[in-house]
Image 1 (cartoon, rainbow, N blue to C red):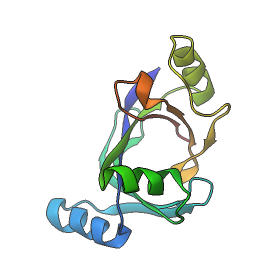
Image 2 (cartoon, rainbow, N blue to C red; image 1 turned 135 degrees about the vertical axis):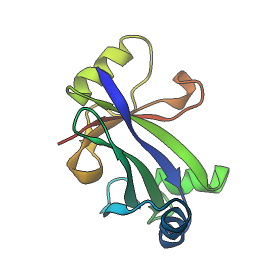
Image 3 (cartoon, rainbow, N blue to C red; image 1 turned 60 degrees about the vertical axis):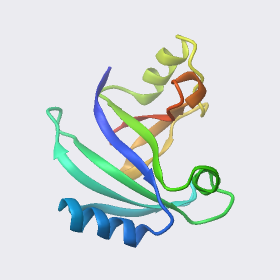
Image 4 (spheres, rainbow, N blue to C red; image 1 turned 180 degrees about the horizontal axis):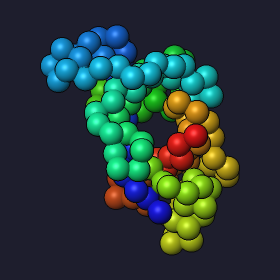
Length: 140
């Protein structure tokens, strides 16, 4: 079952400048930086609040590290801004994705992949989600 908004992904050209904006403007503290080679991004997860299920809600700031990454292509077409919304599950992301696929929504990966902070993730096709790239997240 989906239990929370895990994070909102925001694509940017300059990770440091974008992190500084969110720190200075809203007072958010950076929670976690990492490079995801498979996704081709550098990212910072800014914690917004704790949630009732022991997890938290974040803003995920993502900057491409190579031109052929999906985020680089998205930025070239759309510019900076909201890239995706991610929902957390209290179960297995593979099971959640299979249940949603059974309702006619295309799942982008055959099996979950590594996400931020040790999570497992999968994405749902934006054309099947009213134009919104949707991520499913299972915390480690």
